[in-house]
Amino acid sequence: MITSDELHLKQIEINNEITERAQELNKFHEPIFDGVVNEELFLNGKPKILWILKEPWEKLENGQSGGGWDLVKNLLNEGWHSNKGSYAIMAYVSYSILNGFKKYSDIPYISEDANVGNSMKYISYINVKKFPGSTTSNMDEISEYYLEFKDILVKQIDLINPDIVIGGNTLQFFFDDLKLKADNFNKETSSAWWLKNNNRLYIHSYHPNQRTIKKEKYVDDIVSVVQNNY
Image (cartoon, rainbow, N blue to C red; front, side):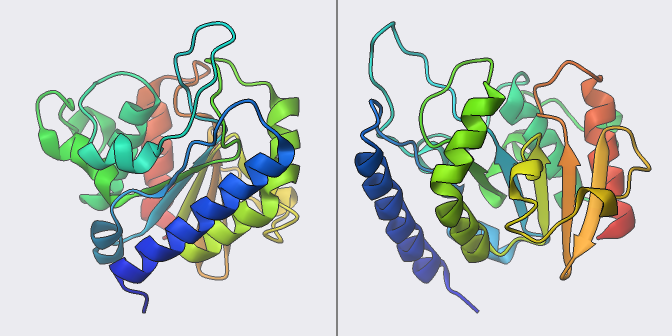
């Protein structure tokens, strides 16, 4: 079994690969790194959860370059302290899975219970696009970045070796490389399709900050899939 120190060093190696790939592509921005938030907590937790989203958001002025920081180490390793936004929804889902599959209505607000926000320290999280994005993603652009970085993305998943993968409208990019088929996903819930493959549970869902369904349903659907199938 890999140790937390070994996992940390291997994540640094992957970050170096991401940097080299970014330089080869001559991108305007520096990459934003991701992966396991806290290696020791992640390895000691159960189940091991990986979220895959589209791109990191960074507030930049017009024409300003960005990136060059680590999303999981510089941000999520401190926990999460707001009741709003994508990371809040991810925290509610992750907290529930790690704490007896609580319903959304039974989960305290992050501002009321630090343990909810601190659940983010126990997860892993990668973006398809490794550069700053805006509040609205361009799916054609995300697809292009997947093609540029798919070998590194698959390497990240192999290193993280999660029990559960939750894709926020991203798993479709990985189907071929992870040998998954859309037709094999169970669609018993409208917002969280699932598939078990090689003892790993894949959940194909909306982005956590979507507005198609209420956040209560988003959280409860994903949690129920894990509770019933993990």
